[in-house]
Length: 276
Ligand code: SKM
Image (cartoon, rainbow, N blue to C red; front, top):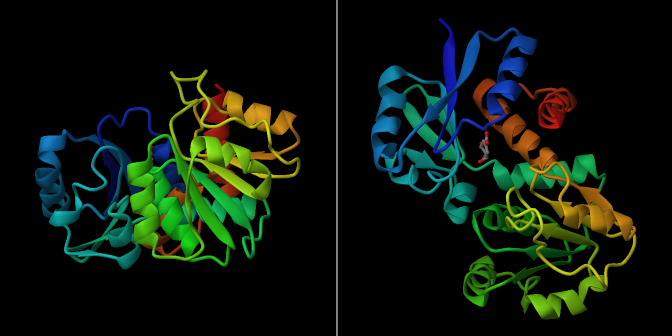
C-alpha cells in the first residue's frame, strides 16, 4: 500500500515540499505520496488525530502550527522541545514523534553549500522569531566562537540569549550591530524584511560589511533579496533561503525513509520552480 506523507499548514498552497519529496520517493522507488493539507488553526488537534486514525506515515508542519502540534504528540525530541517548535512528525507504529529539522537543515546548508567550517567563527543572527530560534539553538551545538543576536526590539532577542545560557552570545541593538558588522564572519537574516511583499525593506545596514563575509538570508521569495544583492556587490559571499528549505526537507525525508536524498537534485527542482 502507498504510504501517505504531507504538510500541515495554513496556508499551504505555495509549498514546494511536494515537488521535492515526491521526486525523491520516485527516485528511490518508494511507494509513497506527499500531499498538502490545509489545516485551520482551531483544527490542529483534529488534524493530528486524523494522522493517527488514517495511519499517515509522516508529516511536516509549517506556519502557524509548529508550536500548536506539540501537546498532541506522544514524544518530542529534545532539540525541538528546546526550540518550542516541531516541523517534522514521524509516525512510528502509531507513536507520533516530533522533531525540528529547520535549524539543523539551515546549519547543514551553510556548511555544505557555502563550504563553511563553523569552528571559531563569529556569527551575527538578525531576528528573534521562530526561524531564529531553530537556527540559534542549532548553532549553539557547533564550535562557533560567537553567536550574537540583533533585533529591532530587545525583549525576545534578550530572552533567546538568556535561554541559550551560553557564554558565546550577546544581544546588540540594531545600531550597535551595524557598527560592529566588520567583526563578523557570518551574518544571517532570519526576519521577513525583504521578503515578498516587503521587498524594499532591509534587515540591517551593510555599510560596514567586510568583503569576504558570508551573508545568508533565509528568504527565497524573491530568489535573492535586495539586501543579499547589495551584500554580494560589497564583496560578500551570499546564500539565499533555498538551501535551508532543501536541507530541512532532506533531513525530514531521512527520518521518514532512512534514506538520504540527492540534495542537489532537490535544489534544482526548487530553483527551476522558483525561476518560472
Ligand atoms: O519547516 C518547513 C516545512 O517542513 C515545510 C515548509 C514548506 O513546505 O513550505 C516550510 C517550512 O516551514
